Length: 390
Ligand SMILES: *Cc1c(COP(=O)(O)O)cnc(C)c1O
Image 1 (cartoon, rainbow, N blue to C red):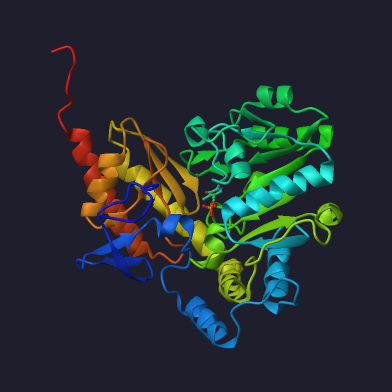
Image 2 (image 1 turned 90 degrees about the horizontal axis):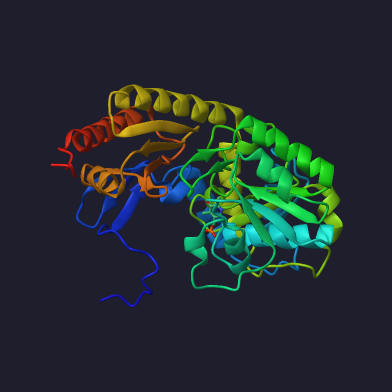
């Protein structure tokens, strides 16, 4: 019996220890963790520099109100600004909260409230971020939704041009949809986004909660799509497991977030900032990012090679260490078979295997994972197909 609300259909695995790319469960079984807490533990479990930073801060000071000067916030904000097109940062505790802040900032700074977002997007579970999420199944039973969102298909330029007007406050997008199945924005759509925002004076909000903090081989994924967002939201990888989120915005938005306009009790507290500072110092170094990019390319190429002959596999896609294997069947049994063989991967939608190793993963670990994936996918591919005709 569990006293938890059953909001998650939990797996029968109880991890008790983590180290780098490895997890050990309560039965003593070791796994290669290519989920990383869903793109959270980008530096792997118990990274020595993050552990040392948090342990030292733990002895110094845990929490003070945001009414005080907090040195860690100034440092992390400066690093985020130096590595993005933004100028100012607001700290919160999660991705949903960062997106909630983005919706509020877009409304207040433009005086408008129409926001365009994408079908199959995922922006979080709060009322605002849920309304931004273009998936009926996530809205089910929670209406009425926050108005006034319009959903269009990503990469449908015509739809984009039809729905955006001078009354539109913002367009909110992921450049690679994570939960939506590792779906990439194409270059034409990115260009159209830029043009439409300019033409109608609306803001571009890029949700980098999953793609940000080095995951795709650049500090933020939007860099690879030639975009310059007004607002960037991050969370997952920012604290390597310490809950922390942030909104990064351009200077023209400063007035809208004046004193008293928005806030958070915990947002950017000294412990969270100790974790985040250690993370960004490590991840944003050029050598680290090049290494992620190279390992990502190797992973994708070798995976494509290994799976090429399989009828079952439609495509391998993604950028950096955010990869998806699009299949012609439901992937739940594949995910489970990988887990039994000691590899943890995730679904993204019903038919995509999502692969999110820690960014510190080694080439050997990547090769081991490819071996397991090939093994499992080949077995499923060769399983006799039940034919309806016979
Ligand atoms: C996970 C995720 C969120 C929500 O983050 P939480 O920290 O769970 O609130 C928002 N946007 C994207 C793209 C995500 O992947």
